[in-house]
Length: 263
Image (tube, rainbow, N blue to C red; front, side, top):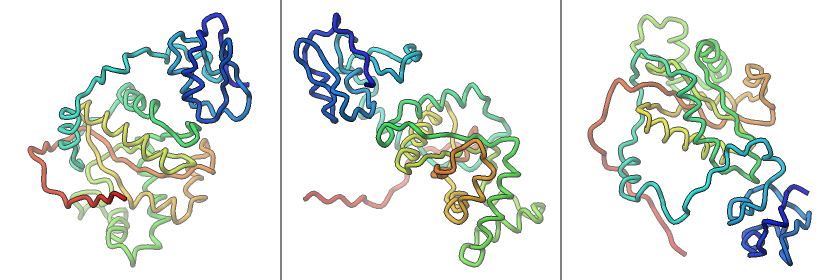
């Protein structure tokens, strides 16, 4: 059994039963957990008007429970769309590091992101002091693709002699990197996307590097030797270079039309 149900508080309204996608709750005089296959999505806990249901796994985290009015959306469509329009990839950064307090503000967005089967197994690594060491490992892994990708060859040339290059071929002016690990790719991408949008709200910026991700695709085991604290069943699904923007853009640019099909 994974739920604590207060029979005295329960009013038998059946809302919890209606939102349970696993048929784990039945309501008679009060709600009862059937013990079938709850996967701790928390829908029952979130919808109960009386606060009669608590997930056992969340005990000790009561400070994370926040009531809100579901009929009041804090951000309107036009404001949110304008925010998305202003998001651009940033590769030029100020010589200013992001502090830990600010990083934890970003991870709040990931904390509230959905994940497959509600596993919440997404993990982040912030690379700062060991960034150069990590990038050398990345090159050591992805250099087998030098003939296929000019950017990887350029990266190798930079590591051998950066005096002739104005920018780092993969990091540009970035000096801090957020890596996202998970057993599920979609969960990792959703979590990092939320983190990224919060970053822009705090005046930060960044860009994604697909070349860094190739290290996991090419030799996952070798890559994970750098991260002994992370379960090797998890893969690196997002690589986001982040910092304080040196350049500010002023307008949107046209995009190719998105193809939408209704059937």
